[in-house]
Length: 479
Image 1 (tube, rainbow, N blue to C red):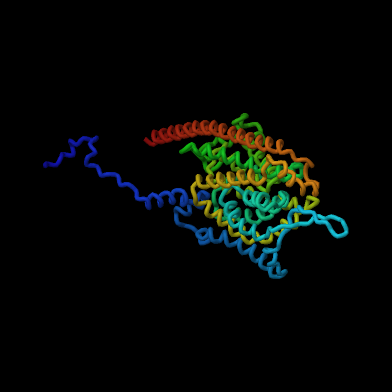
Image 2 (image 1 turned 90 degrees about the vertical axis):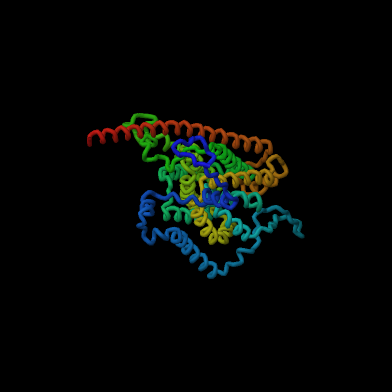
């Protein structure tokens, strides 16, 4: 049979085309892991240029190892010295009585409160192995794991769990922030600046005015409902496949995004009336209030504004929220220690003592691992942790149960914390209202973000056409 002349071959004839080879299961698995778990770091431009040119110094080449070693050595030298000096190894196994629940009648007829507990500090040591890695790798601070576990599973009082969260995050999140900054992972400095400023006022206001008015059931339910509403909003946003995201709030190729011209002419108070700055300040303030209640909040608030409104990639928003949480939680711990009358609870110190050497390893390790994975993997961690917290709170707190509500209220009465009544109906409706209001607020952010994306797209086209016209003029001048 004569061969066909390729000049007269039918372009639509695919009979001789090589068949597309189907991937084997092993190849598909490797491709999946490579895409979602080995995407690579997004570092600052200067470092990326050195990586491309191959001109890294030895400190830059070994930046991951050095970044993890510095906080590890500092904390462990102090911790081992203190533990050996005061022989404090028993702190891991001592039973801790954190709730006064049982009444004992003495032979003389008097009754006293007795404290029975099977809780041991090393339970939190195990918990923070996972919690610290989640804190370093995602926008969920260590308190997002520690607070629900301590209040729901271990029955620790919320204000003790909150103080422990402040203390442990001051070590773990600070170490993770150091790793992020030393590795020069890309963060959004405008968000860090404005949210930190708003968060400083928010956390102080919350510690003084908001947190003391909430009884344990309210604090637990409000925190998980608010976090759950954000996770649901982020999930629906990420169902939009191929959506456009930015690395920072104000990309250099979009000169009008951060400009104050969105509201007024450029010559009038360029910074003070910038609506984007005001939103970040407000997010920091609200996040600071939630931080004062549950030990975590400003990280989720900043993350939600960056991802839903400004459409910043989770690869940038996550390390930004870690740095923010390190700043805010350290301020909260210092304020509780030196500015509040009751100071830091002894029980919080007991838990801190057995968890500090763990989080200084887990949080930096989480930051390193989180900087390599795909943004959708980071988002999936947020969905999972918030969903588990919400379901766990409904099972343990049982906000519809008056018996459970009254039981939770007893320690608060003794410490003069919050109101002296607990209405299950009010708790259920107010928790549902917070969840629904959170969904509405995050949906508004998502809608506004879509409008902002449309405006940014028009700006991109305008800039591209302007550069194209300029290039054509330059070519004409050369000719």
